[in-house]
Length: 291
Image (tube, rainbow, N blue to C red; front, side):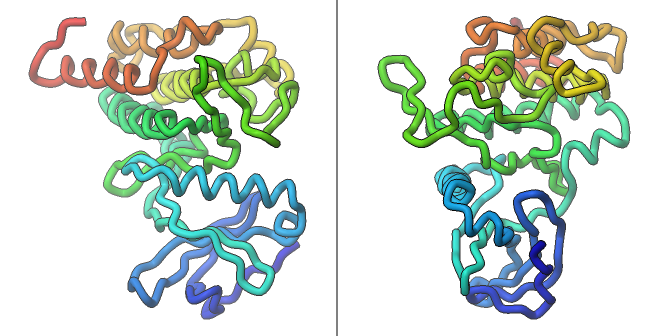
């Protein structure tokens, strides 16, 4: 186990202020950048990662993928550094909590769910446009700031897809087909089967999140991961009743279309998805939209 860094520790020019949290892939600290006079978040990799070339490669890939994305709905990554054998990532400091935490307070009003949905879809569209697929989208990986901005975190499982001849080309040295990566319950059927996935897997995960936002229930939830994955492959989530929380038939159709088992039946781009959700918010607002 790596020891937490004490407040006041200097890490490559940044001053550590406090520990914000820790997970399997390291500790996250609040730190101060004395040159730009701002506080930042620093994710420090545990030793077992920084000394493992494969894990290190994946972490560098996360940093490069995230740094390539300059979008208000994606966590901004500033720098990847190494100081006396400690590898760390510097990112913008967010105040607020994850979507998972927000869901503990109950289902969201449809209007709020649509607003978050539109923001997440715009963030995904920006990533997909750069050939980056998230592949592990879930409420834990979406942060809601205090001013209600949704930010997608952790492109750690992101996979660069090169759009050539309409096929998804796996970049060299990436996850091999047959290896399942992701989180049960949010993975698309093709991901569960270990097939090569493209951005439409993110659209499926988005559908599972949107389902959860409006019902407060997980779309696919069984006692074990294996059963959950079987449900993703073969079952539809419990029907959302239009009477629930004033959910419109339009919103229902969007959720169902994202959760189609076959990728070609889902929305074919995150920007189309954002557009469909925006049309709903227009409709529930002042001006009616025709769909």
